[in-house]
Length: 415
Image 1 (cartoon, rainbow, N blue to C red):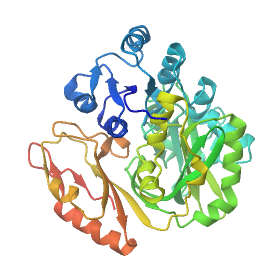
Image 2: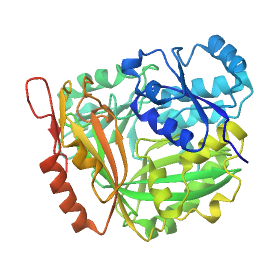
Image 3: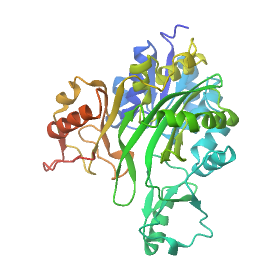
Image 4: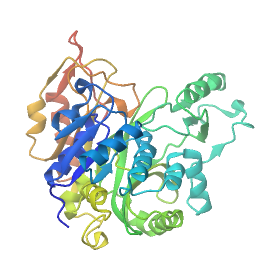
């Protein structure tokens, strides 16, 4: 189906939403973005065909405008808090939504999702019941990690390694939870991997599997700084976990869309850590497009304006067993306001570059250490091997920097 000229309303207008705007425009779709932020704090408004200044939860106003402007579809991505407003607005307007409210409520809530995993024989990180937990078991060899059940991007996540710090850590995590609920888990020091799946009319296929390397803050927060595709666990994961994961999501009732799921693993056991039923900052679709010619972002846009993920069988093209090596690098920064960049042209002209994305601009403030808010620039690279990647990383750390207004280098060498 030709979607050129269709009108897409995108909920949110921050820097990463530019990815949706650019992809939709490349498909010939007319783009409208909306949120309550002024244009100087909403980069997507600068590049969209049209923008509104309405909150994504101002349903009456948005519903009126959707009908008045002849909007064909709605989409959002990258953050959990936008998903239920997206679903509700789709329901009110009668436009396609890739998920039901019930499914979103389970996948957004960490406690409910862990129960879904247990019910389907998918191992999760061992956890403790807050009501009966004894902080005296905590020590350097037996740390715990405390997470708000309803937040993402590592916000509010803290590691506790001493009994005397437990109450302080607990209150910190609770402060990031609207529900005032937390999950207390055993702190895992294993390899980390991430899988992404594409769903078309109930058919679930593995699109990518990557090794995750993280930057950890002193308080235990962790943020992905580098991903390598395909994971060196690819065959092991497909043998041990892929069918279990697909079965779990079929039992949940997913029909369309994309999802990601993160694990800790030692190659023998896999422990679920996080999931997202949405576009993620990992932007796995960039890698699958370079390798297999298909993009789950393009497919979500197609679904939004037609109710169908694609006019072809995604499963016939999806293949996580890549022939090439890819890397997604995040350049992280220290918490401060950015005054200037140095070496941006160098980054944009790297011969290995597939895609460049910028999350922070001059004048923006970098977020807390160990959270996704400290991501400044993202690079998707096609490399020969890990040695080649090391060479490129060295060049980037040498030639690209950003500074605060006092000339302090804010660039974090996280790898």
